Length: 359
Image (tube, rainbow, N blue to C red; front, side, top):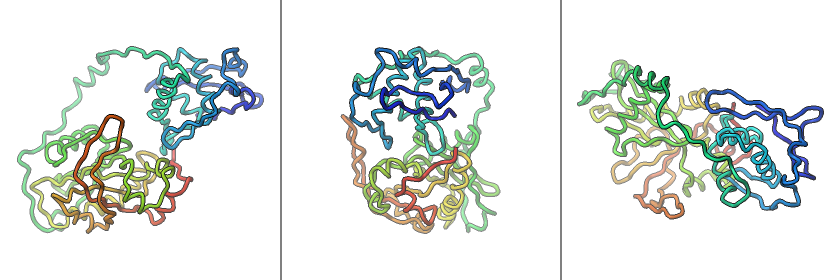
């Protein structure tokens, strides 16, 4: 990855490290090809280039990222210098140069895109025009779709399984690594979970719950809720710490045992396995180890007994009011909020500024 650019505080134009010309790498989509251009610092010093005394000294924030006036000047200069870049290339390159990365070491494309949109709306810069994309798949995609096997249909009705936990011959959580298994989980949630299936946001993982002979259900993990007063009080972190460290909290957004599975203590057994297993799985898949699990339980239908039995702590109830957005309001029924620490020092680490993922 290119080294982060330094800034000349007198002119606010990017300068090269001593003795070397700065090389800018622009990602070209998912093909992983890179276009390389050698840029001398003088090429930024045009009469219309932004300078320190011309800049608004206001500091911008995007999520947990502080956008300093120096960062803003570089973004404006870089955007003006490369008007021919595709927006995706521009965003990915700025993320690399500003060291704006996710806990897994990947560029924060979504956050950077939102910032550029805000800056453009405020008249701070002008992004390249949108390029028209193909409205139909290419020949390789069509060939892949034509030859891709469909997932196995779910049995309907599902078999009834009743008896003690030991009679199942061992239960395991298998991480869904292939598209076929992911689709099976999605279909099962859509058909059998009271809330159905919704596309997870943030980092995610799906697990299949299996015994020696049967598929018993599935688990879906996704990004944590953005703000929960009961959770924030329990952890004790500040708003800035929450915005920076929220990826280390995972939400158990769906937990399904098929309707015909009636095995006492199975749900708590699965949740115990999940807490012991998810750290290694998340590290291998996303490059960092989570610190906390959370979930919501509707008290009108459930008491959360399986979560209590697996050592999850009841933090309180949600307010029932959704996240406020301009022009959007919605209300739901208050839910029970449970949490399960995954490491003994989770609270100190979530309240720190030193959390880093492994690229």
